Structures are given as structure tokens and as C-alpha cells.
Image: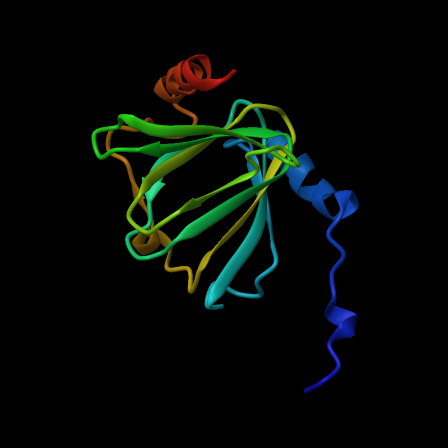
Length: 161
């Protein structure tokens, strides 16, 4: 086995800074930094930076589990029924009592950033197959739409402490 120490990567604020800066300018107010080398890798690992006005549209993965862990800031993690009813909501924060969520394959879920500059770490099975890997909830508003803004505000009002 070759010596791979030169490829070791320190994960710190300086490493996250490009994603945080890009999220402020991105149309979806999100940006990611990946650790996997290609979409074909068997494990997909990345950090996602989000601004407060952003959310991860409710979706599910037909055959992949997904685990999210808050690294910076705060999030509202949600589990939905097939009709859009919220089954569970959890406030996640780095270092907090609730800091992450695991979503089994087939479970509708979404995420709302509660602070600018929030970051989560995500792990799921690869390879990444694009649209085949994700099904967006038909009852959930498209990211960036006027309806999404109202949906996010309703969720924040209902579940934020």
C-alpha cells in the first residue's frame, strides 16, 4: 500500500471558507465541498454550507440511507409522511444535544437552515446517479420559489423554539 499521508486533508474553518463564501452568492444560497474523488465512489461525503433563506426541498432516496451532522450553525431537520404531514422535527446544532439525523432509504425528509453560515456534513451510499437517486416530494415547493419562502417560514414558526 502506498504512503498516502500527502493526501490527508485538514478540515477546518479555512477549508470551509470557500463553500461559505459561495453559498452567500449562489441562487440556492447553498454550496458544497466534497471529500469523495468522484460520483462513482461507494461512499459520498461532503459538507454543505447554507444561508438562512435556504432549505433542502423535502425528498427521499429510494435505495440509499442518508446521515446529516451539524458542523456549524443551526438547522431544522424534518421527517414527513407521504402527504406532507410532519412526523418529526428536530432542532440540530453543532455540539448541541441533537446534532444530527439519520434518514433511512425511502423516508421523506428536508432541512431548513436557521442561521446564515450553517454547515452540515452528509454521508450516503454511492455511486451518485443524479436524478435516479432522489425523488422530490410533489407537495413541496421548489427551492427559491415564492411558495418555498412561505413554506420555510411556516416550518420555522411551527417548530423553532
